[in-house]
Image 1 (cartoon, rainbow, N blue to C red):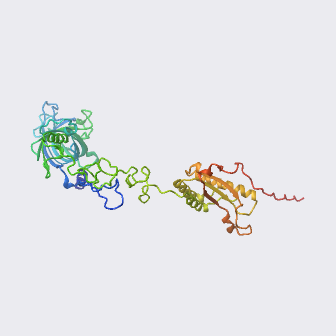
Image 2: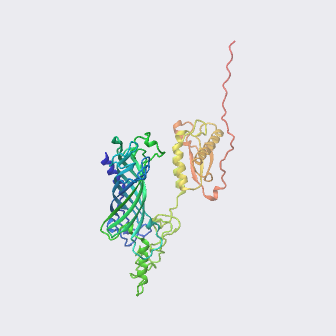
Image 3: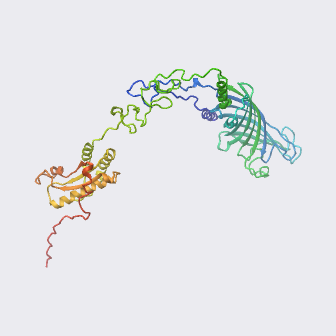
Amino acid sequence: MKLSLAIVALALAIPTASYSQDSSAATDGKYPNTFSSGSANVSPFTNQSKRFNDWSISVGAGVPLLQSADLTSIKNGNGKNLFGYSAYVSIDKAITHAFGINLQYDRGETRQGWFNTKDAAPDATAVGARTQYDAISLLGDINFSNLLRRVDNHSPYRWALHGYAGIGTIAYRAYQKDINGQRLMTEVKPFKLGSMFMQAGAGLKFKINRRIDLEGRLMYVVTGDDEFDGGGNAYSDINRRSEQVSDNFFNATLGLSFKLGKHDSHLMWHDPLQEIYYKLDVLANKNQDIEVCKKGDADNDGVCDDWDRQLDTPAGARVDGAGVALDTDLDGVIDLYDKCVTVPGPVENNGCPVKKDNNQTAVEVEKTLKDIYFNFNKATIRPESNSKLDLAASIIKENGGNYLLTGHTDIKGNAAYNLRLSKERAAAVVGALESRGVNESVLKSRGVGSAEATIPASASDAERLADRKVTVRFIESSEWNSIKKKDYEDAPVKKTVKKAPAKKKKK
């Protein structure tokens, strides 16, 4: 279990080392565009093209001093300081020149109390303790010298201030000694909820050479445990001497970092400003004139081939600072060949949008509305028609245009009633489409009743169904304003119902 968790922690600490950034040249197609790099010579960013080393291994040793606890290492009742020992090893990964991640293992022993547990207890009141610990933690590493550097002094960059902070798991065995001898008071296993701890601090690094760094480091460890000092359980007499709920300690270490890799410099020692100043100095000290456009301008677009990302720009095309032909509307057709520069359109239509045929749209909407249903003798649309209305609304919104919806009935029944019903049903369809997001200004309705019915009244109901419909017609703008929104008043016309003769009461 411990090994598995350690492997997981290691995997989390090591980010992916390889990223790729490549470009592809347009090899076919009629028009070069902003989505291709033309004939640009762009080198891929791969693990082989890295300029700096970014891995290192660090080891060190030092002294832990229990500072915030009931039993401390510094002048705890007898005026003396008790020193333990500590050691660490870490695998370090630099992410940038100012930030990295370290996976660190610590091992050590603190000594605290009135006397050293190696010695005999001086009296019956004296208590000594020692704590052996092992810890694994994941630390963030900030290079403050690189992060805050603003001015380069043209001197070798040999010193760096680092800050560390992170969390991990700590396992320990705490022993206590008095005149009765030494005994184990508390033992905590690793990778448990109660074994989590935090540590933070700073280190000062000195670059001995390109492979080795010397570092002095001071860390403050927060155990989160009141029993770490060996005082016994949290409610023992010793652990009730002060109000601390966490036994914390300082850990001062001196260590070495061994930088791994084939490059001359490590990423954490790279100073971008120093590199810039160096290049400026080289340019300032050159006696010969700087040759501009050394490779010329093969496509005569005003951008030198040295940094031209599209070496075959068509003659007359406007280009950006990288020599790539402009494509203002990003439709894949450069402005030189685009007939509609600011409106996207397909290549086959020279970059202009394809004009929509509104008459065809009307046919599609009418076909969709063919299968909508109303309640018997009413203008109320039945729920099973909702999917058809949704589709019709989406077609109108996508294609635009002004449309007149006409309601029809079959020839059977009262002509005046049929006319009114057709008007109401056409208006109901318009309302249903508008409730689905269609603009209110693009739809109007009317009803013609049975005036255009073609199936005789003697036909079956299934045959007369062809006359009960809503037709759709596209209306040109010149005719649109002369048509009313709907062709009836809101007061409904009720169908005349003959009353049955009253039955005579029996005497």
